[in-house]
Image 1 (cartoon, rainbow, N blue to C red):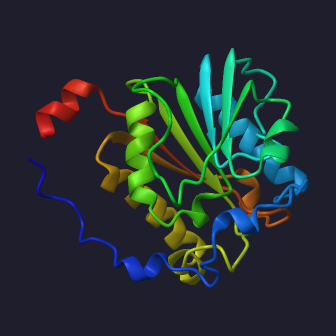
Image 2: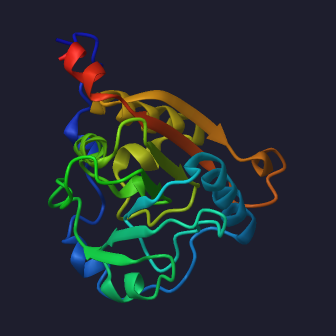
Length: 221
């Protein structure tokens, strides 16, 4: 059994200024992008480099755009989000699922169903992130990537306190910790977009983990 897990994060750090039901906040569709065009291109470039020939992709906390590059061409892209109208307007999606991860972290999919999972500019809103990351590990195929990208934009009343109080560098460490704590990922990569150095656009940060093989998980259990 693993004994090297970090001290648990105090649940109070996952509180939010607005603790009302998320369905109320996301009731009205918002057909806007939350990062600028340069940042969007950076994320698309990261996805092009990391997803390869993935056939089945899950886009978590999805909206009306997924920023998937045209070069990917998967046969199945499932968007899981909070607003049906936004999801229905997303041209990248072949399936949509309305689901509140903060109420129910368990994903409504089978084991090993996806080649890759994305979480784009929304990780700051998860109040039970380690449970969600563990679920991502369950629905991913062995060695499949989970690509978590984010910027410094947020709805501050819905972002968790730990995120709001952290610096950009600390947020990278925090997301990497989510991967480690989930216990089912390896080869965790921390990336920053090349445009961050010049600060001419919204910064892009990305943490990627790869689903460990079942035999490795059983050996560490």
